[in-house]
Structure formats: C-alpha cells, structure tokens
Image (cartoon, rainbow over all chains, first blue to last red; front, side):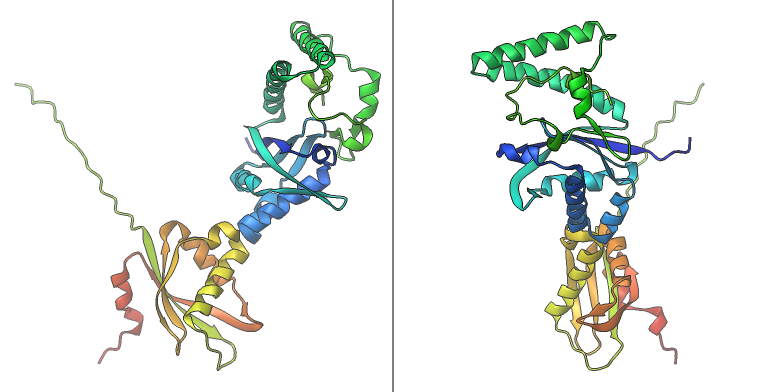
Length: 199
Length: 124
C-alpha cells in the first residue's frame, strides 16, 4: 500500500575513552551523521538522506543508537557511517567509530535483535569479568533475563528507572547521560529493563 | 513419427560499453578567460564533488583531448557515472567568481562516433 518505508540502522558507538559514550547526545549525533553524509555524498546525498532522517533511540550506557532513514537512500547513510571518526561535544574530541549491528525495516525487528544481542553480550561479559562482586551482579542479571523470557507478563519497570527515562518533545524515549548516574562502561550490572526495551 | 524435441540454446551477447565519451565546450560570460588542462580537470572534479561528494569525485574521469583556444574537450567516464557527471556539469555555474556554462555537444558510448557530427556537416 501507499506508505513511506524506512530502514532502521542499529549501531553501536565503540570508543576507547569511557567518557565518549556518556557525552552522547541525540542532536549532536544526528548532526554528525548528516555532516558526514554531506561530505561523502555531496549536496544530493545530504538532501536525499535528511528527509526521513532521525535518531530514534539512544542509550548512553551501552552506546546503542537507532537511526532511521528512507528506504530508497539508506545505503547512502550506511556507507557514510564508517567515515565517522570523532565525536565532538563540549569542546572535547573523542575518537570513536560506529559499528552497525543490524538493519531492519521496523523498530520492532531491531528491538528483537537488540534483546538477543544484549543477552549474548551478558554471557560474554560473564566470561571476561575478573571481579567477584561484578561476577555475581552479572549472574543475577543473566538469571533475571532468563526469568523474564519465561514469564513475559512481569515486565514492570521500577519507579527509579521510569523517572530516568525522559520523553523527548517528539515522544520518543532517550536515556541520556545527563539524567543517569555514572556507570563505568560495560562492567556494571545491566538492569533487566534494558533487556526488554519498552518504549 | 513424433518430431524430436527441439533443443535450442540462446546466447545473448550484450555489449554494454564500459565507458561513455562526451564532447563538451566551456563558455564564459566574459571573454579572455583561459584555462590550462589541469585547471579544467580541477573544475570538473570540483563540480562532481560539490553535487555528489567525495565518492563521486573519485570517479575515473579522463580528458582525452583538450583545446585551450576554444575550451572544448573530449571526456571519458565510466558508464555508471555518466548521469552524475552530466548533471554536475549542468549545475556548475561559476569558476573563480566568473560565470560560465558547459555546453554538451555530443555523447556516445563509442569514441568513433565523436569524430563526425552531423550537426556540423556542411553540404556543398
């Protein structure tokens, strides 16, 4: 039927510097992607990609970004992502790169992929972690994620996390670093709410 | 006796030529502007980069002949980049602040076709 079709690019911001992910901002990142597309594909590319372009989801802890673009021009955006080398915010430049994890036609397929990906990442973290306290915390998260899989009715978000998820003016949820306490990289227990990703 | 089943083999030989050749001429609004061949190529690449970015500025573009007096040239471009080159030449408006325009005289996938132009044919 007649509707605008989009492609959703699920990307991960990878950086050596732990402060890079925390200073992620959806507007800064959107501007950065647009500038890179303009540099790489010229006036034509900038105009073609910016019509349906939006940053739909951003997670400052894990560095996961969900970008939306029109289906006809998603390859222009996708090909521009490897050329992003620095993230600039508040006068600091952090070297980073965007790793594309999944391309989906809807937000729901990307969400399903992200839940499976997060579960796999938890298991990898469990193997790699060194501290006993962290190991217990991660094991608790893993068991909780397995429990959630069996009982899908119990997806209640705790009040603390609800208050931290700020609905933006356009209605989407952005977990930005300014509202969340500092957590160093991946070594913290991931609350199971991120495994279910309610929007 | 039933006729034997007809077996046939169809061979389709498409010969899309890899390159397209364009004969273009650059016209300035004012007279007396000269460009050497390097500046001409720089102008073409900057036109491509402006409209289509770094990716298309790296298209394999060659200037086969260039005449400095008439500012006309024969260009060779790979076939996938023909539309982009032509549209970026169309949208090029100025060189170093001076207004100019590209006139595309002939386009052909065969270089031999550019040697004779029926528009310039003079009948005795």
